[in-house]
Length: 369
Ligand code: DP6
Image (cartoon, rainbow, N blue to C red; front, side, top):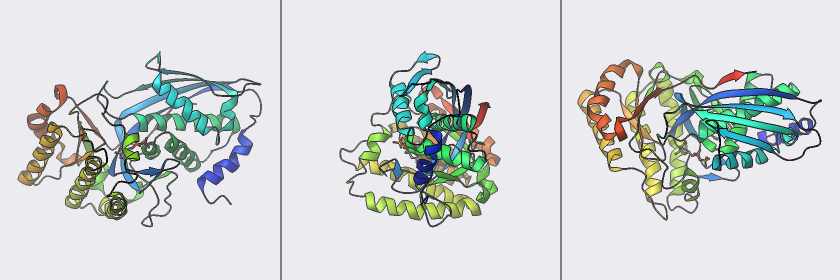
């Protein structure tokens, strides 16, 4: 009994069905996005990863959410008004409504509340940077704050963040890693206890100083919507001819990355981070139907970054999300040299010379309550 988080939260939900009286209030969180070094690509129901992943949480790219709530005695069903940048938001609002419907299993009191959710991103507009991780991170944290306010549960920070991570995973897999600052791990691996497919765990204790202040300059090669969504990309891993090999490679790479993050080997870091990024795109290229999210300037940037590394010996490397933009990774101590290389050689490859200077951040911040 209570062996899994699913069991535990379902068990707890019994006492979360009937609030102790009328309630109302406001909760809010600001939650950053995150960048995976070992990639989650391929999942099984319900939002469980086919392999473990490791990421760091960003500092600048964030979503803010506030939830105004009040009890509606006698009401049953999700009552939601959802605003993005102050305006009613259509398709994302629907995704959130479906998400809340799913979250009812664990938070049955949501059925008796009227919710007004306001959200906005701090990302520069239309950069093509995925916001689902920061959005569902901020939303799940806010729902946990609601639970805490109404029922007095989730008092310990560990229990609070574990449930927020579990709940955010149901909205978007990678979101579960965003509830922690610094580096986090999601997915079962025998290299780390505890680890589970159901939620992320923080990795902060084992990070070498070379990586704890890692910078990430995000080169906006092309903004706008991706041609193939991550949702579809994960689905195309089902029956993919290289899937089994990829999942076992990811297990091995994850162990190696945990070692590197602890021992500070910057050369090994570059090799592994780039291998993971290119393997992710190799999976897309070789799925059926295959597709390419990299653009010519993505490849030009990769080429220039690799030449810069071999010419200067500086510890710079790249990773990629499921899109054309390039994340240039380097320790803070080499930032001046790397920034001038970026200005002189990489900014011309970016759409309107757009880039975001980001890096490892401290994690979500509560806005009130
Ligand atoms: C390439 O978390 O966006 O960024 O669970 O369907 O919402 P869903 O997918 P999502 O996939 C992210 C994939 C990735 C790699 C990673 O973040 O690990």
